[in-house]
Length: 117
Image 1 (cartoon, one colour):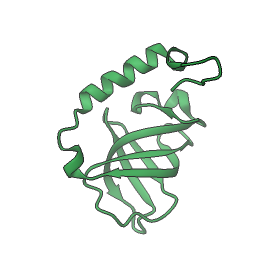
Image 2: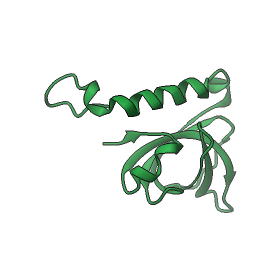
Image 3: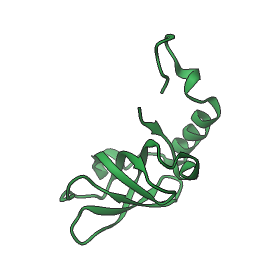
């Protein structure tokens, strides 16, 4: 199960499967590596499973394994076009991440067998 985090929580989640949301700062020469800027301003180097050849102007959500506080091996990603994210409020998203971190996954269980968010 993937855990949704922000840049401030990279260190304590190294080695874990996580979801990061941010914008592409830079794309590598072959298009398989990107520099992601999380919604709270932390830069992460992400290795994608395949070359990215789409417009990367909007937000991107990457699902993968954190290798360290600044590197991630991406298993899959979702590109959100600029037209879809132009009114996205990163500050509100960051507040949500802070709340989720305080509450923890156990607060979102629907049943005993549920693992939470």
